[in-house]
Length: 101
Image (cartoon, rainbow, N blue to C red; front, side, top):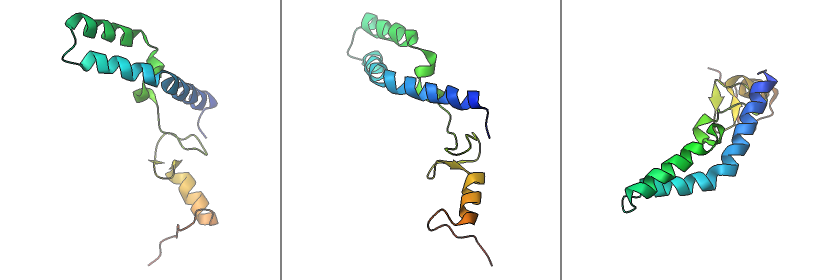
């Protein structure tokens, strides 16, 4: 189990990223628009830099929905490899069969 503080910090970052997504997208479009003047593009970059750091989607960490584990993450199931193995052994994941040969 991951530290509660790490899980909560990541949840807060996800909420901030969602809140600022529209503003960030609009400012990035202005900053990358070659037809806009240099002053407008520079002003957009400055506004972008003023946004909270934790509102950037790149600061989010993929974590297991069950344990909060940050590593060994399987994106399709949104769980860590350990949680997938445990639930699969219990037969709680449809279609998952333990391999044998």
